[in-house]
Image (cartoon, rainbow, N blue to C red; front, top):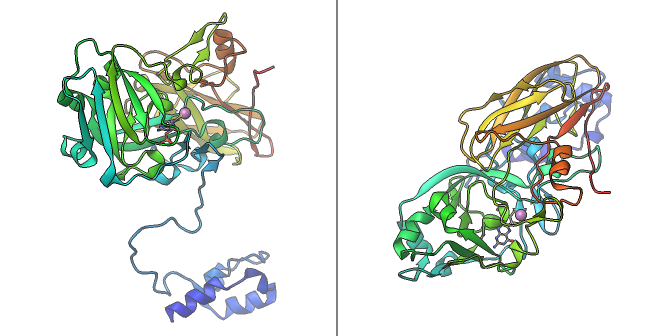
Length: 415
Ligand SMILES: Nc1nc2c(c(=O)[nH]1)N[C@H]1C(S)=C(S)[C@@H](COP(=O)(O)O)O[C@H]1N2
Ligand SMILES: [Mo]
């Protein structure tokens, strides 16, 4: 009986019914009350799948999303973006975590995984995954953000397209300070090279100070093993630092008394600031926020609406988020969902009564260092029009149109 109904349900093309037969069908069932006259698209499923009338599927080995929910990452050949506009709260579901790969996703057998630590250390050592897991572990909720996380250009852009290269997970692993104690750092070692085992053999130089402060070798993500896309079986995790330094599939750490000047920190991941000067090793991700609801392609109706979004800072905690509903003329403090964590996405909310007139809504983040999220104009004034595409965190505005459409307000700076 159950199988039959499921089959029937699956094969039920709504188009096969005209309104008359629907009424007949509806009349013949207890679902009549659910039928709305004038709506020929009435959900025919209701006629046979009243959930109280049919035994549901049995428990499964893996859970799944509702078939009515289809969040998707937006992919290109080099990255995929988190659909920020589809999320609640502050955790990014692991399968929606953004991805940025320079040489694709390697397939690494955890049995063969090894992490070599050498260079200016007392005792060079190789750790298997098992070895890493024998150390005391820590878990921490924090975001990762690619430093190339800003797109603009047209009104019909989603939060995902504008800045979907950031996601948040609970990361579990071993503190680098624990591992460094094991190998013994030689006096004078101030930098270390982190190297990945992907086809790109990604390498970055990291100050030992950061490693000792809060660096981790992470092997867990949201309660399970890291996803391959996030660096399975182990990655470097440096809370608050530009995504690129969080070397995935990490296989080697070499300590030194100077940076290694790899490709990713010379020809890439540097940015012009002013007067032809270039900034290198710009590790911290600056405070930022974005309203994710309402946002394109959503819509609004006159009356009360909850403005909600995400704010984060790589330098500490979010102190407050201010929201403007009058195109930046006045600003009001939003409420912050607890807990507000260090170097973590925080959800902010602000209740607003929209009177139906066209207006612009926007948010700006202030972190515990006193830093305030700048406008694009302030960024241009500080760094010049040739500032390139890294470390851009401008205030993002949405236009509420009279007809209820919500559009991105794109601002361009390249000539
Ligand atoms: N080995 C390796 N590590 C890497 C990369 C890579 O291509 N290879 N990409 C970096 C970049 S540019 C970013 S933004 C982050 C992205 O992390 P995610 O894919 O887990 O979101 O990983 C960094 N670590
Ligand atoms: Mo990145």
